[in-house]
Length: 381
Ligand code: FE2
Image (tube, rainbow, N blue to C red; front, side, top):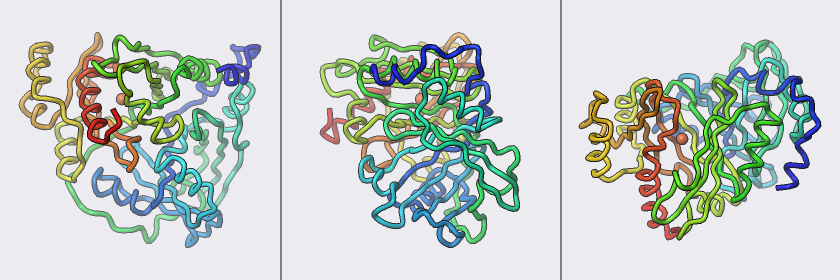
């Protein structure tokens, strides 16, 4: 871990400007995929996203890729695919399969965020650049993080077009109709990193980005009979919440190791999306064909007793497979999809927070046992 530690300047003036002090919120997640049009269609059909913009040769793009933008509530994904074998997108997809390339963050000043990040030890991938069209100017800059993942700082206050210059809202593909899903925003984006790498990445986000540690779960708290992991959550004090997992020693292969083997690198494991009504959201997603992890019926026998004072529609939650947990601030309802990629790597979480700021620690055991049943079916446990 010394390499990363070396990059992080220990001499920086920690009272100076931090990137996190310029964060406004999630801008978008860019996925690099084998077939962007089909990935956009999947998110539209199964998850109820709207396809809102496209960029490709037809709109004047010349870098050998095309992108679809899909949106729901404040969640925005960009699906990018290669138009030929020599594109970096094709190389990346060959190595990792489909996955999240860029966790982009809206900032008030992209140049200042980039300069602060690099001065504090981040590797710059692309220095600030400006793109303009008749709708205004967009400023972006990109730094590297775990694996082939990156963060782009996006300054869009002076841009009023669809997504970015070069994107068009004309002539978009039609999408399947279905019940409204009601996802409102990204709640958190989780990374898996190699064993032993967790402390240095937590250090990176604290010292380079100026974020804070929200909570840490050790392998005692996150273990099953077979396997274990550790997790630390860093956040900017408001919207940008980034849990980071690493595998811990267990009797058998942990789900994090399966991810690392399959993706071939650290990367984004799951994206949690918030809803104000998880029963309606999960019902709609199930109707649209989304498959979720199932916990055994015994989970509900236990949780109804453990959380008996919460007045919840227990039968409905059990029918839909929604998990319940509480912390000192309130409770939360959550549910996890199966992996949405061919390789067992990326999945979604749907979460409804009623005060609780936690991550469902009370559900970890039941949840990870459900994941391990899936691992076993793949022969990876
Ligand atoms: Fe999560």
